[in-house]
Image (cartoon, rainbow, N blue to C red):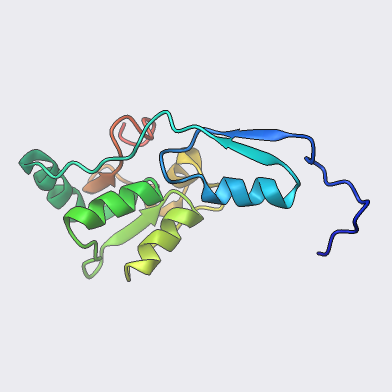
Length: 150
């Protein structure tokens, strides 16, 4: 929508502080700019992919499960850097949200995501209604999504 020169934008006098990981401020910066805000990007951490033997083994085990849960686009990218994700016949792939689902789709993996894009939304999905006898693989970063594993 074109902006009229004297029309105030809702956040024109604001500065948004972005604490996203290194090199991941673009989306927030663009959204803030559309509302007139400036962005100060600070990265308190960076996403790094570990590719040691233990990580490779854990990823192989997770990707071999009946249901594979991906917790973020970063988890998808890290997994793909180690081993190309693909779904086996009959395997269910779930994503915590639409961004994660899009990241999987770009790699050729079809995934379902909940309407409510958080751990609780994922846990409420019908695919996870009865999990007692099923193997579930969790593809996540260290320290992320602590509600899913239990």
